[in-house]
Amino acid sequence: METDMNAPLLAGGASDASEPPPRLPGGPVIGIIGSGDFSRSLAIRLVAGGFRVVVGSRNPSRIPRGLFPDGVELRSQREAADSAERVVFAALYPEHYHTLVGLREQLAGKVLVDVSNAVRLNSRQRSNAERLAELFPKSSVVKGFNVVSAWALQTGAHDGSRQVLICSDCSDSKAELLQLARRLGFSPVDLGGLCASGDIEEAPLLLFPSWGGPMLATFLLFLFFYGYNFLRQVLLPYLDRGQNNFQQLPLVTVNQTLPAVALVTLAAVYLPGLLAAVLQLTRGTKYKRFPDWLDHWLCRRKQLGLLSFLCAALHAVYSMCLTLRRAVGQATQNAAYRQVSTGQSGLGYAALTLSIMHTLFFGWDFAFSPAAYPFYLPPVFLLALVLPCMVLVGRTFLALPCLTSRLAKIRRGWESARHRPPNTQETIEVDPPGACGDV
Image (cartoon, rainbow, N blue to C red; front, side, top):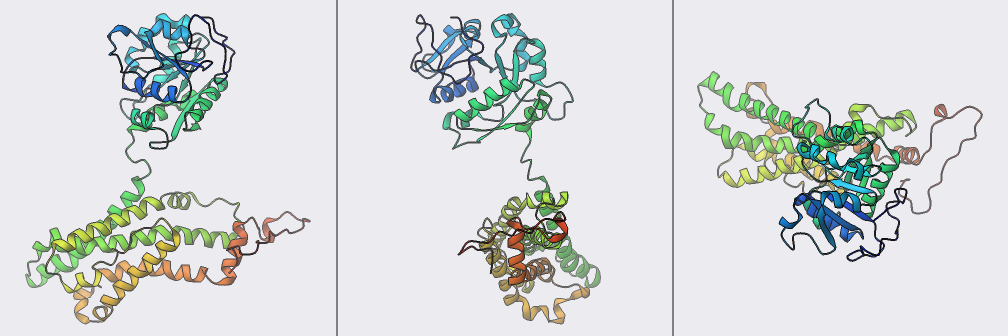
């Protein structure tokens, strides 16, 4: 079957009468070389997206009947490469790429999609896509779909990861694959040339890439409060009076540390928002970038909120395991358990306020007792309240009508006079009736 190499990927071109499509007349033909799990899942998704699929295998007769959905043709690798109109997926391991060298003529002028992943991080070697491009210089190699799991392909984009990372040195071929990803219901992300393929191949090997900083911060907070409790209640009493409290380390000390960490972490969720608002008020514009550290902090608030909730949940579990608690434990117990959700700003500030009130209600009298300051060290719940109280006071100041109105105008595009070019007339957008910008 002769095909027009210049035909667009998603156009409904006419097909040869000798090879009618299985289900969808006029549907573009896409080839998949390889018959593994990923090939099967990709074929299912392509057929559901309205494409005709030809799967090429070294031994098509050995593929069990019913493994691939109806509408998928099982042929040899050469026949699959010949039948594909424009796009051919290389769904096999990179160490087997050299076995496809005999298909150079069949794949010439076509878009060859590499879906492989890296074996290890920071290998400092050429990517699989770059090696594939060297083997097939007459083909347009595009890196993509490797970050999408076989499960996400079968269940649909809305039930799995929607993001598809794509890169290629050929802009036209990359545009075709971007359009293909959109038709399948995914959200393609253009990462530029094929030099970015190494990062894309290593992406599936990264474990929670956006959680490193929040997890490190939470761990350091835990070490600080746990070390402070150990020093105040275990080590110093043992050195000064010979009192042995080491049995408290596994349960009591941990149970007193978790709510403090949860409370401070919850405050850290809203502190960058306050700092960003102060910067905007000071600068008088929203068109100037925040510092890198603040921008990174703002992008990690969701992770910090979830870690705060995790510490509060662990505190609840530890509390159920303890039958006897010390007075300082009573002061901090359940202080952060009310942090049910930090996704919405109003609910998050309500949780922070309730946590502070709960801690102050149970610990205010103990805070003024001389017995609460052994070795001149304050109780841990007082330390845990410093940052949350600062955040709450800062939020109260920003709620003043004069600051709220100015901040709302800045975020709607208004700029102070020092940021406007000279000899230009000031224009201020007026909020519509019922807008929440002015207080």
